[in-house]
Amino acid sequence: MSPVLPEPDDLLDEAPCGFLVTTLDGTILKVNATFCNWIGIPRDDLVGNKRVQELFTMGGRIFHQTHWAPALQMQGSLAEVKFDVRHRDGRSIPMIFNARQRKRAHGDFHEIAAFVAEDRNRYERELLSARKKADLLLEAERDSQHLLRDRALFAEQMVGIVSHDLRNPLSAILMGLQVLGRSENERRVRVLGHVRNSAERAQRLIEELLDFTQARIGKGLTVNLGAIDLHEITAHAIDELMLAFPDREIVHRPSGPGACVADSDRLAQLIGNLVSNAATYGGRGMPIEVRSQIDGSDAVVSVLNQGEPISPSMLATVFEPMVRGATASGSARSVGLGLFIVNEIAKAHNGSMSVTSSAAHGTEFTLRFPACRASE
Image 1 (cartoon, helix red, strand yellow):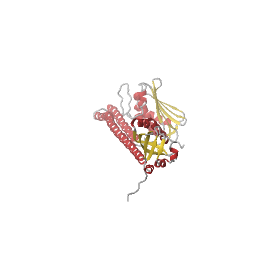
Image 2 (image 1 turned 180 degrees about the vertical axis):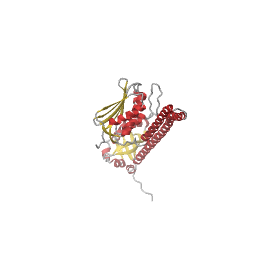
Image 3 (image 1 turned 90 degrees about the vertical axis):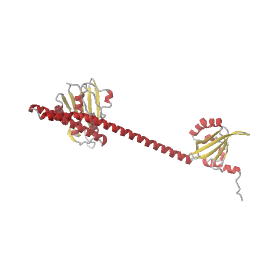
């Protein structure tokens, strides 16, 4: 015995898809129970009272007006167009719409089939999420490749610079040792001085490289903070620098009390780098002025020299590693780490470095850091 099929109207009303018949302006003339159940609105509230586009979200209404209606009029049909339909409780239901324009005896109508697209919408979201993750991974991979290339280039440059800068003092040491073997006492003393200076230069270069490595690869420079007298530390550093630069006048100008908390060795290193920089790039025969003071809650050390001002473009990068200035003679060479290390010492003291440079005032590097620990 063959099964009895429902009436055609019942099949359409309970079909597993929504079905609507509208006028050309979108007014709903017929709608099946499936669609009504999906959106939670009774049939009587829809038929003759609503246009299909009124059921869409605002973006869907705009798309209906600008794309759906013109395309349906020109083509006569549309397939798989996605709209978000508003449920009676306010939530949105993603649906796929197929539409066809029909010519009937009583006029022209639009016949529309609708399908809930929750699974498809979920799939699209997952696909979009996967695409974003893939893009992020690709970007991370590109960044890693750039970083590797930059590190390789940096290593190559560093090896070249160190090889060049270590070669000069080591050559002087070796030549001095040869001369010592066949020289008189007076000449021997003079050569020993050159050997000592060359060895100290090589040692400073190695120390700078070690500090640079610690700052870039580690967690910054280490400091041993303790109670010090800023003026005494500055004066002691200047006394040693006068021996290294006997042809330069270095003037110390302390101001007020000098009690503060800092790493005395690191401060001496900072002052030494700044004075060395001033001696290298400042005007010959002009004094280098070092000031130390406690300004309110801050300790301040500044080094001022006269001479050709630093160009604005160079000022922006002067504390970057491997940035070198140019001397008038072009003879001065360094690894270009001195001011970078100065800046790292300032950071290690929770302070900062600044620089100003003009023909009228000269070039002044200033360290400013808290004079006392936060707990004191």
